[in-house]
Length: 78
Image (cartoon, rainbow, N blue to C red; front, side, top):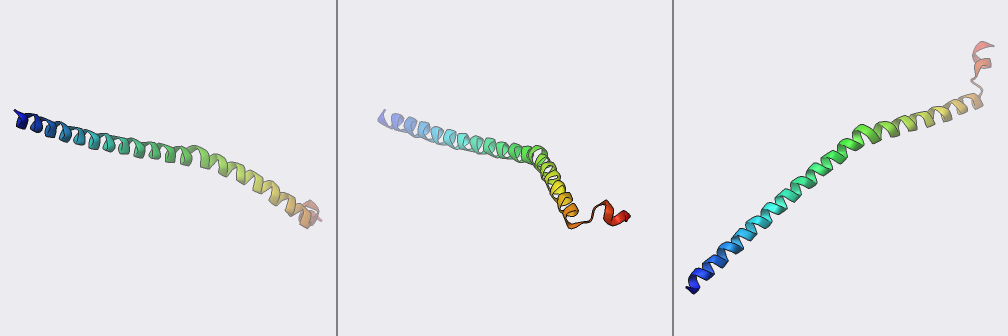
């Protein structure tokens, strides 16, 4: 009888090992899906918004510098 208990313990320990491995695999898969969603969020929402903001800031700075250098209407129409 002790051998049967030992073999049951071995089976349960192997079963928990497989379960732990399966849990780890599922957690890893969920983590990768979360990273993919975060990547999509950044590439579809954040980067275009930041690019638009940066482009507008740059254009205002460039236009002010353009006028300060003296390349305004008087330069082209005079």
